[in-house]
Image 1 (cartoon, rainbow, N blue to C red):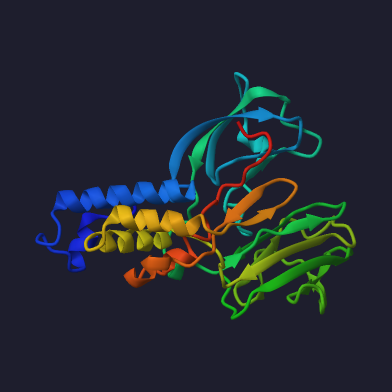
Image 2: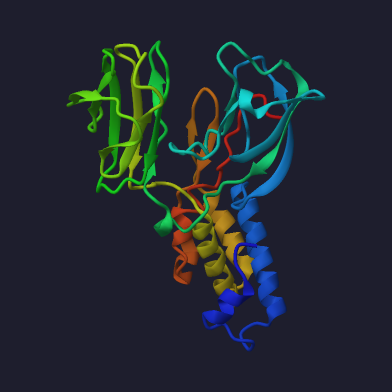
Length: 312
């Protein structure tokens, strides 16, 4: 359930307004409605999925991945070290959940031959106002060694794109760094031992200060904002508002009106891999209930799950 009886009691809902049993029933009904309405859940849930292998290096998954416990090809369990799991890191991978294998290795082609066990759900832990600024994972381009890692907590006031390029391979290699996406650079920076601050709390560290290749490049982003991210906190707010509404507005009528408004207009976004539908319609009679947040959150993500070719 996306809220608790205790929260409603602490916010003025008395026993005269609704008993514990009635509140619990409302919360369960609203939570199930949110899951059904969006086609997604917003908390970690352990699941086992069986998919078709298509002989490609990347396996697209239907549900956002939180963590993978194990992977099997047929009856053979495969070490997780052989996979890269895209699971809500930065950038936000929840609309494109996937697992990849090393270059040249593929997921074996077959029917129902790949089993995934893990935790899934469209969720990020924590309230949105408490989520820290994000320092992305460097993306490497080049032919040399990929040994740069990033860390830290970004304290700047706007999102930035950071570029690191090797520009010297003397005894101690050097690099040039840009914090504006490659427009301007500070050149000939020595690869020192330990983490080095690039800008405003963003740290980088090279595993080795030598043996790099001129022109090798790493790109990553540091961001203070997390646009279009639904968190458990957003869904909790919706749940609470709908339950409070249900105390003085027939819940069945509210659901009916929401479905009616939702189905009046559909906007579709399609790529070669998936299709997502958004409903961005007004709430009609529900505007009077003061739950406009549903218009900007729940309706927008009516279809969160990408529908990938090959999903079973």
